Length: 235
Image 1: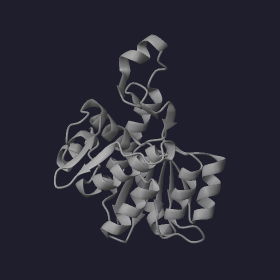
Image 2 (image 1 turned 60 degrees about the vertical axis):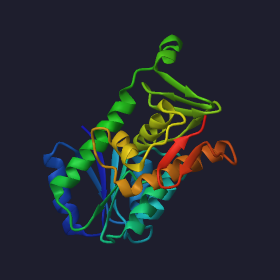
Image 3 (image 1 turned 90 degrees about the horizontal axis):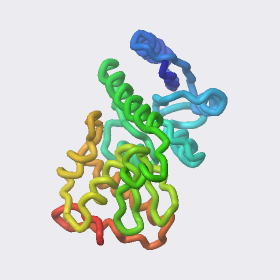
């Protein structure tokens, strides 16, 4: 049974969400502030985190930042009453997987959570490849290597921590080296079956990928911006 941690300082909303998620077959734990959430995450890690941005003691953005700094790949959904693109981009930049504005439909939130849990299960259930079979599922372009079966990415032999959306974008580039991919095309390739990617956020995801590659190769410029057209992976 998937375990979900719900974090919000609105007790009434927590009660509503707890009932809805429990009815949907999830095991629920709750927290009312960021510090309590962090303690719960450390003590009993869930499969997914749903957290409000505006929390006492430690806000949602800081919570996401702390988890990613620890190397956690936990799927994270941010809830917020700040319905602006800037807030969305900040959330995604910090490493959140989805962003839901209040007020929201409980059914819609559940659908997003289900999609994120499904993709995480696919990642975790990927079989351990033998050396021979790994070669069959590996995509290589220059210093970039992707294992499509295990959903793993490496640059110059160093593992890169990526979300599923980031992996899909990297795969799109590696499968089409030198080809200019428009934001619309990248959006289509990155959606997969969950459809949670917003076309406004393609630039944010590309920026995050570049940052991770630059951490391994300072000055990395392999993903080129083609003004007015999109992006391409240099060969």
